[in-house]
Image 1 (tube, rainbow, N blue to C red):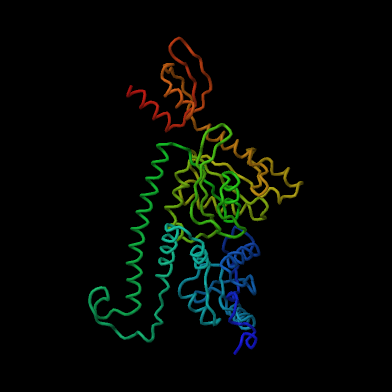
Image 2 (image 1 turned 180 degrees about the vertical axis):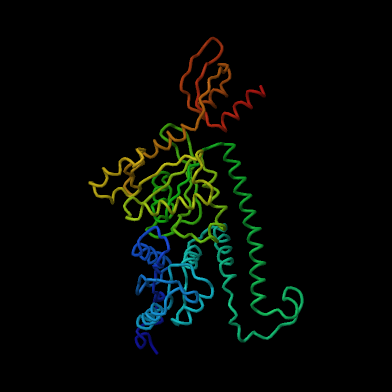
Length: 437
């Protein structure tokens, strides 16, 4: 058969993406932060993020949760019909399913079924680039899969004998697989503990420098990476897709006042973030907990911006940062270029009277204002001290100008009387140096 005979089917053809059906269960009586249609749209975006071909999407009303399938019999029949008509390969259920519910649905609709947690894990697996990111994703995936080992090993149901790692008499294949997963989880946790120690050493090194750390947080696809690139002139991957950034990236940037800070781009948050991911990415999220200032980047043009803000605050609460008064935060209303002019005026002030920063990472609008706001927020954390420095001590004088903000200087006969604003860490270092003299 020639290429012309088969239409070039096996020549220079891209792999055909799997066909997907997305179902968002609208469960009666279950509190939700956003309308069902908006939740469905987000689920479709998540599905498209792993290159699935979404053939159909639907909101499924659930008056009463069925323990066996979550969904009612009528909805399950409707899903099966769509799967047959559209030749669906995989059904995405935008909710958390128990292992039994997932298994029963697969049998009922005769297609592969993935719940919200499994979908997000798939995205994270496709996005992770660094060794640390891959370790974190694998740990989360194994923790998830461990509960979903099903007893479908009909060809392996005979009992095995053996010794060593293969297990003793009576151990079945499912038990062997679970034990192998447990062993791998233990090894991954040890490796990630090493990563955590290394990251801690890096943080200690930065504190010795030290430069304040400013971490960008926000809902996924809010434009954090684009803003990061704009402020640092870096080239971090920034695309209009959910979870484009998984691995943290750090760059130094100079503020208008002259001081240097480290800007950190972090993984985006999302509603109903699986607990496995929060635990696995704790080492990465420690960059947020250790930051001196947080920039909460919001997609101001998204109708669900307020709901997304609540979801981010929930994750920050899990990290113990929601009520941390010592952790200042600036809200950045990004994508201002997409907001109609008549609505921009309404966003100038928040309901509580405080101001946020309107900006567009794409056009650069408002970015100078943001840099000045960062400068002021970090300056507010400084302590103002007065001290006399010997005029011959050029090293200390240069250090004070470099590390602090000299507010006033009066040169006297032998010493310079300075009024300086210093970060707490720099003040402690200065006091230790003066005591050693």
